[in-house]
Image (cartoon, rainbow, N blue to C red; front, side, top):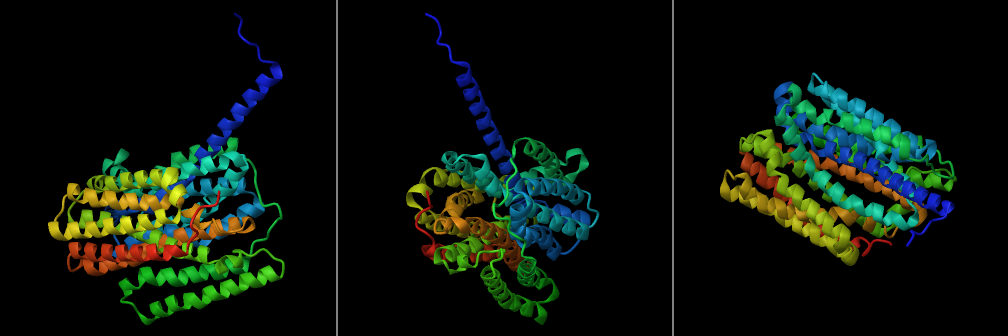
Length: 479
């Protein structure tokens, strides 16, 4: 019996389809690599902070700024970066961002002072704001509509693990002292990763831009940046200066400046221009509810990943590696929760999964505080169960959050809404570091245990409130 013979055009077509599929998934790998670098850099420095402080000096406020400078610059420039991708091309902005991110990572590792490191962290966050927001548009260009859902389904578990894997990796790299680099390795690791992502992106990512040629709203960029800085700068710096009057005035001023920004965006839209943010988004209760939940959730996530490793090292005498290892249950729990939520729970139960995840994470974080209080000087094995529970809760929220948040947004506003959600995620990181970091250091002089307990209970309470606010969000993701 002879084997069947395929006709030559059909064989060529099958081979071309297979090659196209491989390029699709390689493109997804590049975009995921960039997302992972961003999430790691937003969280990795917490466990390395004691080593950085011992080497470069500086106060506790400097530690907060090393973490907050990155997320603050990202938040300020995120929406601008997304709009620049629409204007000049997403592939081009992606490549510029990756190259700049690699260079700034190298300069972070070469920093000889805390001031230089903070400046390079801010520049690193600025370039991240150029590369990360291009991912959504590029994925829609790479994948046919029938495969876009599968591509986004990979994001949840990967991002969930990356978001809480920073302290684990940071602890290992800091104590491993690779080639004598110490804490500098947490930044050097980005250089080969970014170089590989850049080379692969040149090969597999298509050029992509918005079809209608929007313009950059420079006054909107300036006013939005001012509103964010007015809020975050005094939150981080105020405690170190004794909370002077100007710090409260700056925070209060951020509200009317933000209101001016919203009015400006409406005016730009009436004139037929291209607003930085679609004003109609803020009139949608489901979307504004999502913003409120996201602000609390990501602030708690980022703030906790700063204060818990600091407590383990300053309060319990853990090494950086031991502190990272103690966070493994949290990372594993987050991966499990994100996998369950992304593959099944989020699709079936929608908003209820988010609410349950927020309550579970709140309970787990409160249990960490209770364990620290009862044990006095807990070991890593005592903290593991509550960290695992809180990690599962965080993972349940992270995987479906963006899909559900965008469910009630019309197609023509999806790009703007995605940019706003990502910007809020990054701004929340700065707010979390500022608020929870300030609360922790304010109490640290009276005992590290008490400082941790009060800070974690604050975070747990905020997450429980966010679970109630989540009733405003859409019930299901759009399919």
